Length: 414
Image 1 (tube, rainbow, N blue to C red):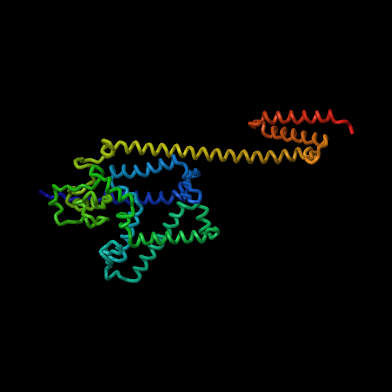
Image 2 (cartoon, rainbow, N blue to C red):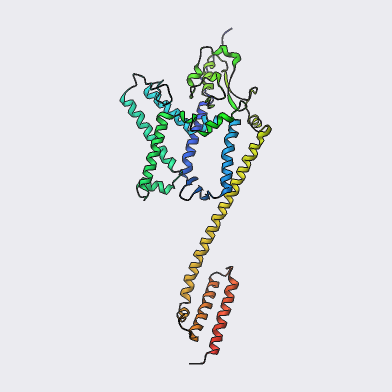
């Protein structure tokens, strides 16, 4: 029987989807501060969500935010596992790109990480030009990333003034900018995946809450003879683990590169690869319903309750913050309106006010004072007929005119 050969070019299922997702998330992170959608302001101890200022003393919003930040990672641990790390996290994207650039300039097996086996550089690539290009690439990338990072803490006008040198805070911002650039450079050049193993709280807590019920890479051990002495999947693993024997504590990020590699190798013979994504131990097909069912089964439904509670508190706190801003704007408008009315009425009643001398007790001067008072009240009511103080203004007019008339009647003609 003639053996079937697959002449169709192999199309990876996950690589370009994952890369598009990573780049899309990076674009979103850049657009958030660029468009002013979110900012942390230490000077006013506030979050700025678009034009909404949420102060840190808004405890409803703050408690809700804490609950959401604590529950969302646990929910993802129990459903999609470490997909966030491999498909969304910018740190992994930068680490992959840094590794790729290092391998291109210093050799396919080059390693300059501080947690690696040591400095490994191909002899034919160990040239000053290659090192210079690599270093300059990391510096430029670090400088650009540092700029967008600082935009999460400074306004867009502050950052523009920083670029043009027109801000009074230029010295302090220069220090912050170059310190941030330095730390990002160290991360890109030498730290990379080591950050995921220790400083990253998401990865640390993942080891506590991740389970086999979550999405993970599964190996078909029943066909182990088909991959004897192959090891192709391990050479494509971005975290240097063995995909055919992944432990729950391993640093697998569910990137799918090993799955694509195995499928590509077996596609030549028209067979299916031995690696695939699986939910649980016995499920053959991955669905969101199955993942959510496993995640919120039993007592774990409390996580969903806490998550919804956190969202509710955040919305409630946000409404309070929005109402506070509306009240402040209304008060400001009322003050501005009052000042404008005062200017108009002072001009209109200037002659009567001139006849009122507080140091004199002569009846004619007191008459002028009462008339000036009535004039101011009448003018104010005319400018703002719907004023909440309309009744008091009318009473002021009546009293002023009555007192002025009474003084005129009681005062003998001079």
